[in-house]
Length: 323
Image (cartoon, rainbow, N blue to C red; front, side):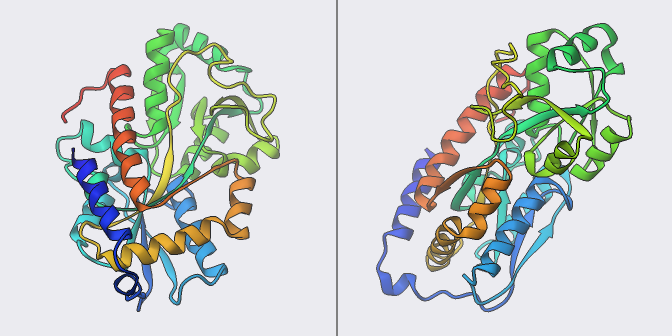
């Protein structure tokens, strides 16, 4: 019901009179909040949005990424609530912004309570090992986990991010159990894998593509609907024999609660232009990302459906829900 109400509100926002919606223009630098550290997927995404807007000259001010790390996204979400009504702050949402409130009692801030502006991409992922690893397939990793348990270690981020959810689903199906070593930044996870401190890692293509192409890492499976360009020899989870849900990772932009209607319209129009720009399209193609732009109204509806989908995955993975 809340998503339906929010969708109605956004419909009014984007359907109002043209003169009223044309009033807002940013007058100072825009802050783009991301919940993870430099080099992480959210950070790369936020910085690419900022760079694309500036390179295409779509706004009269600069866009600056602000890393609000802590609580697996809770710190960033709470910061956005504190900035209620502010037209000069945006945030890059990911799936963890949806899962946190479902399993953490203290994480009371929900994305659907913010101001949806645009969904921009749906992001696949790959599970990688070192190039010299004895594991040639994901099944090899699962078999080792059955025999050696916690000696097998996976690097990851938040316990509620996609890498942790895929781990839970794989453990339920395979019967194996292995350690999950959490690092705040993707660079730290990759360093741990390259240094031999962990055995494997689920990572988005932008975070590890160069290392894969350089032959330092090897992809053993894809979390994607179909095989990605450049990874034609790597099977998807179903092709590798794992019947678990394809845990989605959507990224987009929201404003704080109560963002004025004319500001929403301004950013929605700006991001629509950005999504069609050569700069953004080059980023998508180079990082195996799916172009998935939705306007504010459609993004509001999507977020409601996305929360329901993630709720079902959390239940299937054995997580206890608090909401």
